Length: 146
Length: 179
Image: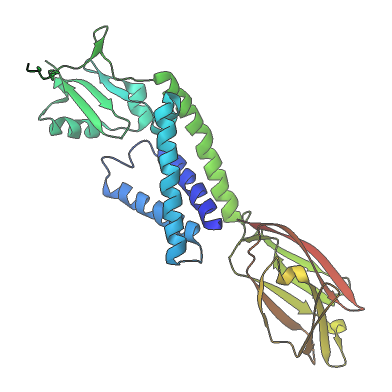
């Protein structure tokens, strides 16, 4: 039973910390951020499983985490507010060709990140970007000027 | 009669509201979230500093010492422990603790049960149970003499324990076991 309780607590701690990481942990990860995700995950695994490393214990922990994740996903689908709380909200970085400085600064986004996303759309100059949107999954969407 | 397939054309357009791209941005929420971040990160920092100081076990704040008057028994232990994590409680005996070539020490059952005593070093010559605890007898000649009890608590919470040298001195203390 302890394992399941620890797994549930670990899930929500991980969810909170990853949510606080400026939305870069899941998308556009650099090697620097890979280190972070693997290290946090490894530490949570140690605390969750404890000294009981049996297949039974690990299976129960995995099922518990899966169950909690499904419950959270269901709750998110029922409540837009909860979805916003857990996943955040899309944020406009460039609006009609103008940088939204407070959002860019607040999210710790560098112009190089937006330029990289623009190059992915075949745009070579940020002057040709009409909108850049930081999506909830951490990706940056680019809408070129027409 | 043939039925026409329902076709929804895929349009290469981006939804706009009042000439601006509609992405569902909620800046009001985001500003509240940034305020929350400004509060939570200093709290995280405090937790880390508190942990470095031993406030969450295994450090300067966690270490405790208790002694009886006369110095017959001095106890080094950790007042804050972590569940399922080993630690050591050390009993230092002064000259008054040695009687007829022996040291007899009583530890309450909570040391064995709640605090999870794993082993005692050196091994006692005699162990006997009673009075809600265990009495150990060790052959001893001269002081200082030390005994170490390795602990590994499994029960989370505040636990009281008692260590006593019969007819000489006793120490009562508390240990907080964190999850």
